[in-house]
Image (cartoon, rainbow, N blue to C red; front, side):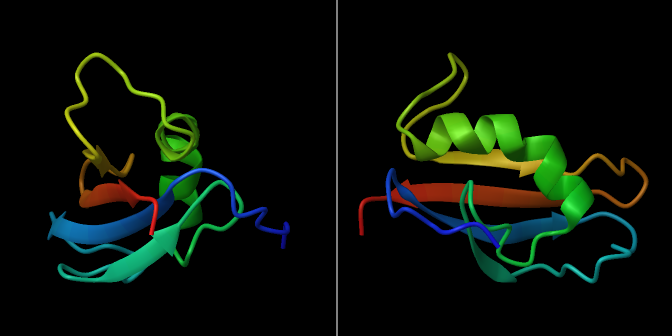
Length: 91
């Protein structure tokens, strides 16, 4: 695993919705810690899909439709879609 350099924001991830049956076993209320160095147990397909947004978010960037220090991301499996709220903090 890559060494986490401890730079940027800390990112907590909370599963807020599961449509269908997640084959990776994610469930509503599950909490993970993710960053650009560690998927924190998040499904590889999901992590790969959100990585560009995660990188922007972790290092303080924003996109025009993002508000504040939390964003919602969804996995690429539209039949069994998992929704996760990412929150960043300096703590």
